[in-house]
Amino acid sequence: MAENLTTLYLYKIQTGGSLTTTTNDAQIVSIINAVSASVASYCDRVFESTEYKEWYDGSGAVRMTLRNFPITNLKAVSLERDKVADITYTGGMLASVHTSGATMMLNYIDSAGDSDTEDITLSGSTDDVAALVNAVSGWTMTVATGEGSRPMILARIHDGGDALAPNSVELDVPGDLIEARLVSETNQQIEIPVFSSAFNRAIAKVSAGFSEGQGNVFVWYEAGYTLPAAVDANTAPSPAGNVPTDLTMIVNEIVREVFDGTSTDATMKSEKFTNYAYTKADTKAGAAIKDAVARYAQALTPYISSKLY
Image (cartoon, rainbow, N blue to C red; front, side):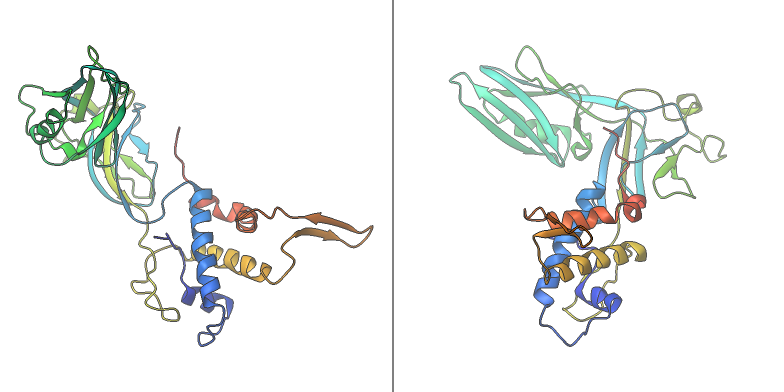
């Protein structure tokens, strides 16, 4: 499903198009889909409101910038990892474990040299997931003492993935939660209210802020916008969404450029009349949209992801 930042109605209202003339509607909608996808790709982010469960490197500071914005719901923050289980594969030639969203993937090559993957849904408790893993031939998930009831929806692989015996993969979940809040003047930073009178956790654990470490800070949050939903081609979106007006306007302008360009020579990128010169454009699919988005790079700067790799 396209992550559209505008609708046909909003496009026509901004550009002065007729709401009753529908001749080019299908083409414009197609361009809106492609431009919205290209803008999301250029900004390297998801614009639609999404839930994230992420681990960050703590720096010791009392504030931390998250990868996605605007933050709309800060659900949980932890400064600890608790080991809940080990996962091992025996009798084969190679094995690894990885997670993607709510799915844990058991990847392996058996003793005959054949490869396979088993998908395990991370839901329920540690014991629930262990039962699923242990039902797969050659795989063993050993739950740590007292950790059988931990929520697996928050689990992550910590050890690099090598599960071939005698190696094992460690499965972690966040430890005790701490008090944290969204920094009021931003939409992307969180902070530990160290000096708050309501802050009654173990102050020694957080007095220096988000403790220094690698992948030691867990944050569960929601971020992004409610996108405009088109009722029909020429009706105001419902819900209207909360995409910033300037971002919608930028997308509409790019759509207009691309649409107007469909009636010109698509092979011509530039033309100079004094000492005549002609430059042939890149005719690969999507080149016109990519070029148009690039021309709005400065305007899109506030919406570019600040992901750290």
